[in-house]
Length: 55
Length: 194
Image (cartoon, rainbow over all chains, first blue to last red; front, side, top):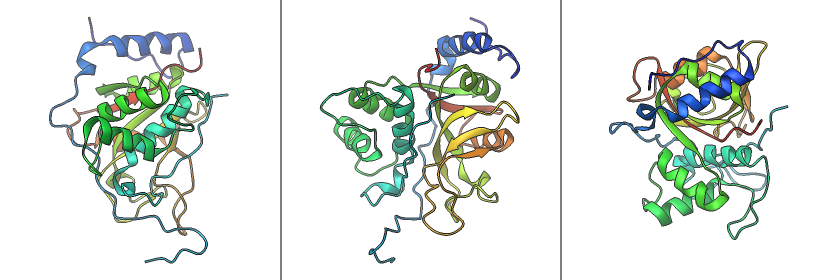
């Protein structure tokens, strides 16, 4: 199956729906890269609501 | 009008809040996928990051470690009967077209691209992150982005969904670790706009 090519942004909704199905069917896009990292831990934290003290 | 899920914040005081961006993004995606319709099962509604995290721990273990698309996909399928469709290394133009087709998506981004902008919701953080993208605005091509960190927890932090310029989302997604040049990783909802 050839690599799907996106229609321009101004194309019809039907064209975008057709492209979406092509993307979802394209097997190479289903393969999760082995070296794909997970997201990282954020340094911030919940700062609470009224009555909760900030650290 | 495109259905808009309720914004959910990642930093909610729960034990795994610091690593729950993907769970939180999938909570919002799940609500979009069902257009707010409660599946009426034993797992509760609306979708929230904590039950998704708990289900991942049940299914995959890992405590409060970072999570990935497949783990969240399995969790929301069980909890909310939502089928997410993760795809890897797709051109940004295809992502844009899929959003236009009627789908929402969880997108992997590099937060250091967001840091210098007014959309920065976590000063000092520049690592890998997940956001939920609900729709594209035709007038200027901007995307409605639900950043789980945008909870206005102090002055200067954005609150709730924001319209990000397409160029910014594109750069942030393309900068995620391990993506091919010009490509991004995203997990899509079903088409909710028939």
